[in-house]
Length: 289
Image 1 (cartoon, helix red, strand yellow):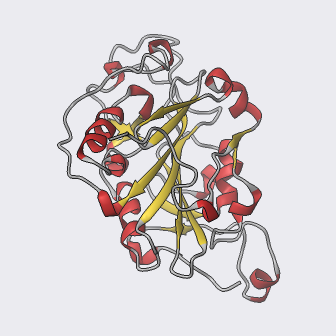
Image 2 (cartoon, one colour):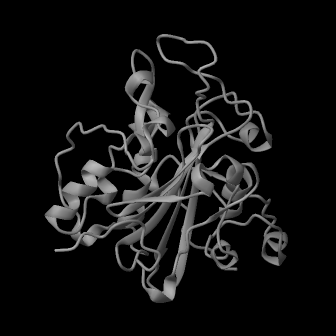
C-alpha cells in the first residue's frame, strides 16, 4: 500500500483546495532554501534558516481512520533538512521548556497501520520541534484540534492545519543549561494555528488561534495578549504577525472580522477581534454576515 507523503491541498475535496501560504518580507528572507517544503507522512515543514526552527508545519487530519499508535521516543534529525539547520536535545534539560511538536503527533497517525506508524516516527524529527512552555504543550492548546474534529459543524471529521512559532526581534536568547554566549537560539514569542474544514452546509470554513508564551513580545499584538492564554483571532492577524499569506479567498472563510464593515458597524463590533478560549464553548464557529 502506498503511503501519503506531504500535505495534501485537496484533502478536503477538489472544490475546497487549500494551497500552502506564501512567505513575504523577512519571513521569506530567513526561510531555508527559499521556502522549500520538506515532506513527511501526512505533513510538510518549511524551515527558518536563521532561527533553526520551522516557519510552519502543514498537515491533514482524518478522524475517520485515526490509529492509536504508541508514542515512543524516536527523536531524530532529518538529513534532508540538514543537522545544521535543526536544534536537537541540548536545550531541553532542567528548564520549563518542552520539546513541543508543531505538527501534533496524534494528528498524523491515521490511514493504514503502516502509514500511522511512519507518521508517528516522522513527527519526532527535530525540524518539527520548538521550545514550548510546558503549560502550552500539555494544556488547552493541544485540545483545540479535537474540539474542531468533534464539533457538529464539521461535516467530514477532517481538517487541514497550519501551525508554527511566532518570531519577533525582541525574542530573548536561550542557550540551554550550559549558557553559552551568543548561541543564536531564541525563545519564540508564541504560536499560531489555523484550521480549515468543510461544514454541514458544504462551505469551507477556518478558525485561527494565537497563544503567547513570553512577555518579551512587545509589539502591538503582543501587548493585547496575556501570557499562556489561548485566543481565537481573525485569519488576517496570523498574516500580520508571521509574514505568511494565504490565498485571498481563504480570509473570507473565517468568522472573525479584521476590517470594519457594515455588519461590524451596525453591531458595534470592534476590529480586529480576538476572544479568549478557555473551553470549547468559547469557540466562535459561525456568524451571519
